[in-house]
Length: 203
Image (cartoon, rainbow, N blue to C red; front, side, top):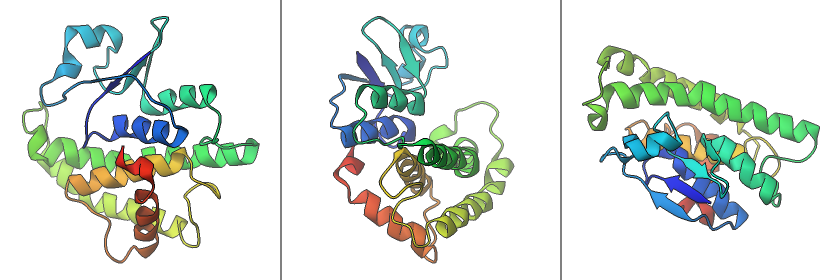
């Protein structure tokens, strides 16, 4: 199989790299440059019509796109450590927090990125007013996660999970676009320091 990757700051490919590092999986990879629009080439669009990385092409030709779907596939092949949880309750809580990262924090970050950042200046349909309006929503979302992390070492379970991977990559991307974690959010900042110290965070 081959993993179609893109380098930082792209957060979604990094999710898979961190997940694979936690599992000790070496993924044969091909790096696609987003600034060079290699992810929009006819060759890659034939594999993933959305023209986005990451994607995982299996030996039988099947292509799995979307970062969490790729991670679920890797979990099925390499169940230890169980980053999607064990037992009905833990798995449901991890899924709940995955959804919260992707539905509460990621959308306003994406809006600021697409509509205000210099790197996306050539994209059609930019609306700077909408982008700026989302900056307060990022801080509001971070405050939600700060409260959730009070007294907790990890986000969704009593061990590191895919939810921590999602939140880490999202917070780091927020910092990249100029929206770091506010100084007063001590629980979120302490959690971020802990998970950033894991070797997998360098992926």
